[in-house]
Length: 313
Ligand SMILES: C[S@@+](CC[C@H](N)C(=O)[O-])C[C@H]1O[C@@H](n2cnc3c(N)ncnc32)[C@H](O)[C@@H]1O
Image 1 (cartoon, rainbow, N blue to C red):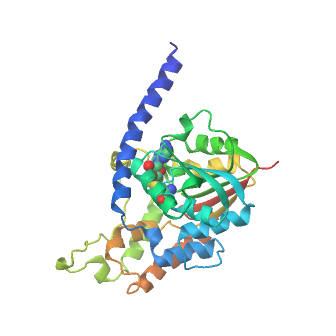
Image 2 (spheres, rainbow, N blue to C red):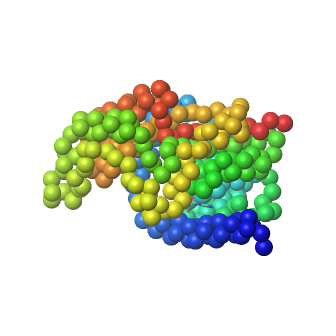
Image 3 (spheres, rainbow, N blue to C red):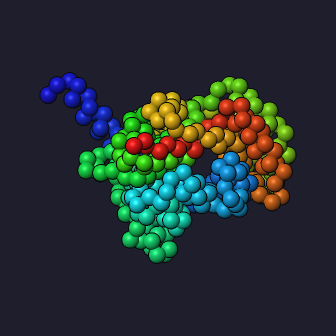
């Protein structure tokens, strides 16, 4: 056996082991339902506004379904990799943006949830759930939509994943991604961390240092990146190659559209304070963070983006 082939096999074996750890993390995640910064009503409204949605008062999944319907006519067959509980995919089916979805995930728990929700909505026969890694499925065929919702940043080679998506699309088909596209392993630059730390200093005490008997967390004012090793230990696929998403998208889908969705300061600030925040009581704090986030996004500093491309032909 050649050395090159040996290397390939080692590489695949490594990922198989990594996939088991990723699946374990997400099995647990989808069982427990943690609060998410993207689910704050103000953040949903922020995303909806940046995506030109007709309503700011809906789940982001619904905003994305409407957006897909606008960029492309109704599509018979779509595929999504890393679907989780398939909230976005089910919203797209409900909105009539897509007729049928084939969805992949490594987590059995995610797919069980996806199936249950689809069946409850009467869409069970239009959502085909497949457990595993789509890249290993050689006879996967072609589709009218390739969707990546917060999952492209879990791919070990994001350029290869985008090239694979392009090859899976029929002419006139749409690549649609709503993703973390920031630095790999969340390794933020010093300037950004300084911005976050300066903003953190302005956050009121009831959020930063809640009373000890409140059961809430005391937060650190200094914002820093966790080490890549700490991040990989929790999930080897976490933002493993996210820093290459935008360059690869620009190279492989040059006519594609990038809509900046912010996230550069909002993610870093809102995630640690989520448990301490009350969206109504702290509305002004959340708006303040999002205003700073949007100013940076307008200057080209963003970590979340919506990527769209329609295959010519
Ligand atoms: C951050 S979650 C996003 C889930 C969902 N799309 C959403 O937006 O809520 C990433 C998902 O990708 C899945 N995943 C990671 N690597 C994968 C792979 N190679 N193939 C299929 N699914 C994968 C994980 O199990 C997890 O459910």
